[in-house]
Image (cartoon, rainbow, N blue to C red; front, side, top):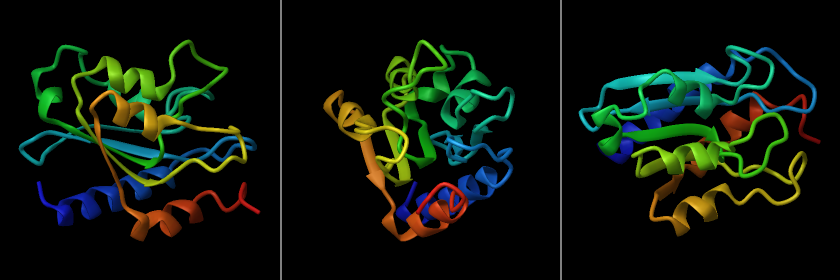
Length: 150
C-alpha cells in the first residue's frame, strides 16, 4: 500500500469515529484493519458494542486471532492505541502485540487529558511494530473529540 492509501484509510477511520456514542471522559475513536491486498478486513469504533469497548479492540474482535491475513495487515486508528485502561484486562497496545499485525497508522497521539502518559506508540515500536503518524489528519481526528479538548 502507498502513503496515499494511508490517508484514504485514515479518513475512513475518522468517519467511523463520528459513529461513537458521545461519552464524557472517553475519546471517540475509529479503527480499520486493512489486509496486504488493500481490502478492509474489519472495522470498529469506540463504544460500538458496549460502553467500554475501544475501537481497535472492536475491530480485532471481529476476526479470528489466527486469521492468516492479519500477518500482512495494517491497523488504522484515529488515536494512539491505549497503553493503560481500567475497564478491561488488556490494553489495545497489548491486543495488537498479541496479534500478527506489524504495522499501525495513527492520526494523533493521546493527550495527557485522560491518561497521564500514554506510551502506545513507544511500546509498539519497541516490539518491532512499524508505527506511522499522519499529523496532517490529526485536526480532523481531534475535531470529533472537541467536547473533551480544552
